[in-house]
Image (tube, rainbow, N blue to C red; front, side, top):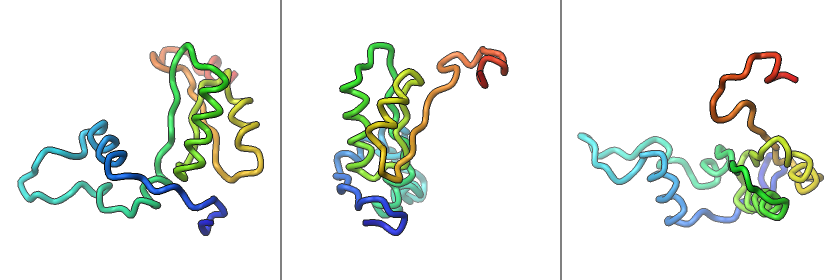
Length: 119
């Protein structure tokens, strides 16, 4: 159990970290001073607690949402981000935990007016 009341996260493997760093362009390329990116210096527990685990798509199922939330808890991620229509399922899955739920507003275009975004 961590100080925040969350269960201790499952360890991130080197392969998982490498995949995340590669996805954000944080690894693989040498720099002038060959210093690692600051995110690569964080202990795994701190890094996982800063990740908002995101599930985006148009054909997402309830089973996928619940699995996504379980991954969030298993790895100690900061939040499970799900489409608005699935917040209820994520909330059910996270009930009794300290993990957070996030959702998506006006993704991917960002062209809605403010009144639509806050409705």
